[in-house]
Image (cartoon, rainbow, N blue to C red):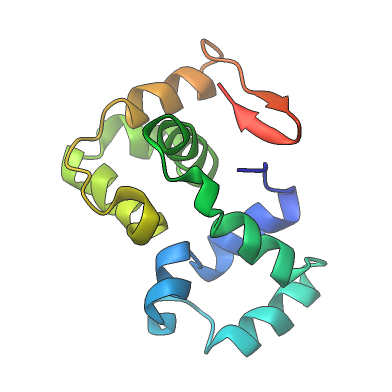
Length: 137
């Protein structure tokens, strides 16, 4: 997965867009009407929707190592430290499944190691590096 820009993070937080929304056509869970509206709204944020969608739906991120990286990044980027510390395991798993159900966290039942890695990253004990434009921890 490639890191999000600040504009993309704001767009994702403001709209509630996730890969699951796109894959399952669940636009009613967002502030967006449909993919056409997502593209138009993304433009207002200065974002190329096609590039963001491609990054969100990156099917190369479906092996266990990649999913650990994606889960860590998503939780650490889109959720607060307070949420990560106080959320139940079920809430964390729901957040991960909501992020990317298909080719992702569909069978996930545990919040670990995603929660602890995300907290370690937020608190500076885990470093994110970019290798060929992709996120690694």
